[in-house]
Amino acid sequence: MHELDLIPASYKERLKIKRWCRQFGLAFTSLLVILFSLKFAIVNKTAVLTSKIDVLQKDKQTSIEHQQKYNDLVVKEAKLRKDLEILNGLRGGPSAKQILLAVDRVMPDDIWFSQWTYNRAGEITIVQPATVQTGYFIIIPQEASSSPNQQAWKLNTHMEINGQALNHSSLSGFIRNLIKQPEIEDVKVINTSLRSYISSQIVEFNLVVIINNQFKDDHV
Image (cartoon, rainbow, N blue to C red; front, side, top):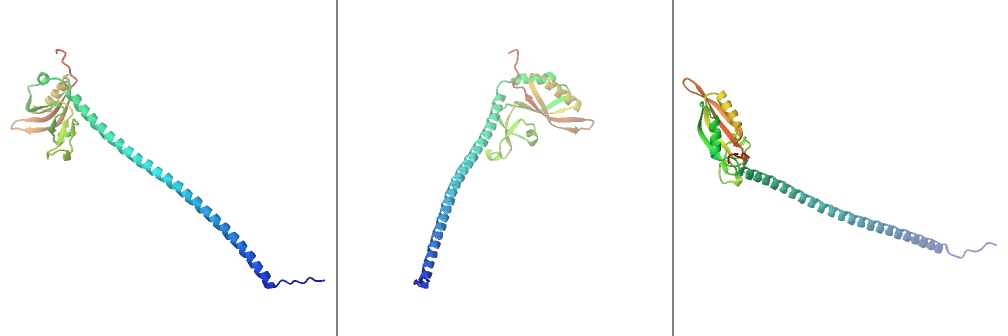
């Protein structure tokens, strides 16, 4: 005997639709939960990375500041070394009388001086471009000086001598003998030139004579 199905087909269809709706709702809810979980994880990771970036930026800024401080210290050290060099140049050394005697010992008859200046270390002076090349000056920047001329600190006690020699051989001999003197550290030839007269030529010269500041007179 066949059983009779008294449930209307429309009712069964409604039940089927409700079951699908519940399944869709569960699936959609699960998807939302997954999406919110992913969003939370991404936001949290972003916050962590942002925090690390901020720390790195601060470290970078600190590193830049340290580098700038280091550069400033290097500049100050260089300046202090120059100042110390100047101060060392001011200490000791032969007297002006001793230097004159040293020059007189080696002065030949065929050398004549037209100008002779004596300069102590640590003084400010006006320098010519050729003189700067000797390396015995610290050039003062133009913006730091109100003078339109190029100024510099003298690093070494020295003499600047302009004069005339009978010939280049006489000048060379005079320079060699002058360097041998204990009061003299070095002699720099700034320039030489020939001057013609009616019957002869002479050599005009410009010398920088560096004084030996470590010189000590054993007779003192």
